[in-house]
Amino acid sequence: MHLQSFRSDNPRFRTYLLYGLVAAGTIALILGRMTETLADPDLWGYLTFGRLYWNNDGFPYHDPYAYTPIKAFWIYHEWLTGVLFHPLYKYVGSFGLQGLKYIIGLMTAFTIFKTARNRRASREASAASLILISPLFSFAYSPVRAQIFTNLFFALTLYILERAGRENRSRHIWCLIPMYLLWSNLHGGVVAGLGIIGLYAAGKALAGEKSLPYWLALAAAVFVTLINPYGLEYWLYLKDALLMPRPDIDEWHSVFAALRNGESTANHLVFLLLFFLAALMLALLRNRRTTDILVLTATSLMAFQHVRHESLFFIAMGCYGPCYFTQAWDIMKTSSARAEFWSNSVRRIAPVLFLVLLIVFGARFVTGHPFDLTLRSPNKEKAVDFNYPTGAVNFIRDNHLKGNILTEFSWGEFIIWNLPESRVAMDGRYETLYTEEATREYFRFTKGETVWRDYLLKYRHDLILFRPDSIVSDMLSRDPGWVKIYADADCILFIRRKIPS
Image (tube, rainbow, N blue to C red; front, side):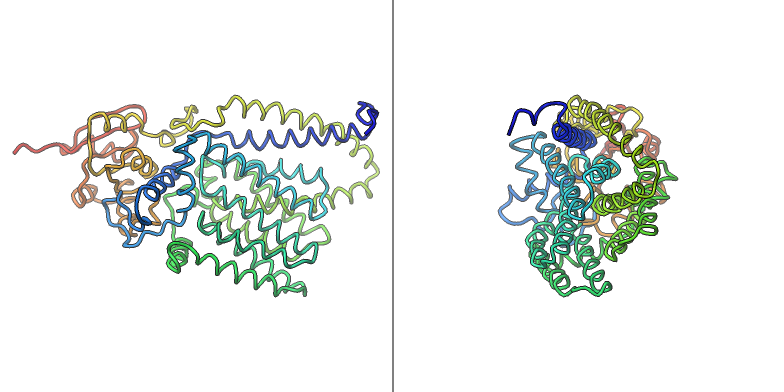
């Protein structure tokens, strides 16, 4: 290649420079969004299962950490995540877990971009869509949940299905089968992927196109999900889990309930904006596809019902939106008298925008200690239940205290990971492990909705650990049967008062 090609006044050089800046700015944006170091409560559950798996002779079908009623057969649908995470954390530490999160996040973003490009969307529209859906990489990538695998495999499912349809080569669809075998053992979100295959099959049939390969692939994908340590029981659990109400868990609230409660308001407003754009583009633009309508409708309804599912809609919009945005831009350029003005404005603004993204979010990533795993939020505006009771755990360990611990729901898995000789009344594995009655009793007790002494008498609680501002702490402070033995800004630890013999 001639040196002239690299001259700054060469149009090709300027184009390559712009593309490089767009790529760097987008990567910085995604990494910056994912720079969250406060450990998710579920992480400790994965690590605990991994410890059971690697330290036991057989597969852990029974839990040793609960003292309230549990199911006879423990189906931990995220078992493979724990099996992978435990050695990664043991030998590499937080660097390994966080590094895995960043790699999978970037792979997901690249898959979304490639899916949009496969649908003939412009590079500019595809990159712009990644900016629009970038909140996904904040709320769906807390360190470090099994959902990161669902996000990647959901995007890969859309990519494979789109490629098969675009190239009219249905054999590409069979690439899904080994992926679904892995997905079903990593996270229960595989159900969403199966639903997408079904929607594509239905969309092809409604459009009068060949749909049999899609139906066959769906049947094969369902079949391989049975290859797991639990067999058919896995699906019986998923059926109950899908229908189970979870009013006490924030991420299972509806969008409007979350907005009323002030929960992650910015993310939900972005979702509503994307929903409006989706409705607008499907209503006004030509070349609408039946599968687009079905998938965007299904994922938006799921998101409206439970904010946890907003990530699926964000991914779908990142894949589908760019081709419609490209279409709208082409229409504007041909119909507007000021098309050249707008094109020139975009060319001038784009480099500045992506340079700002590179600087701001790149700095956020570099300075945010991205490979750490913290147990306390530096943001004092966050509620104290975002912080872990590290002081109380150290106090229990230093004083050789053992026994049954009644604790905050979000702290249970942290307790069993750090104090394996103790047991808990409830933890984040509740839907997989505890009976419905045990779950109902626990949440009614923590909200003061029952005669609370009955719950204290029904089970043998040796230690009770809750937030200082909780109903439980307030009740126990006035109960002569319990005495406070430790307190800090995040938690209060009570022990049963010994009765003189």
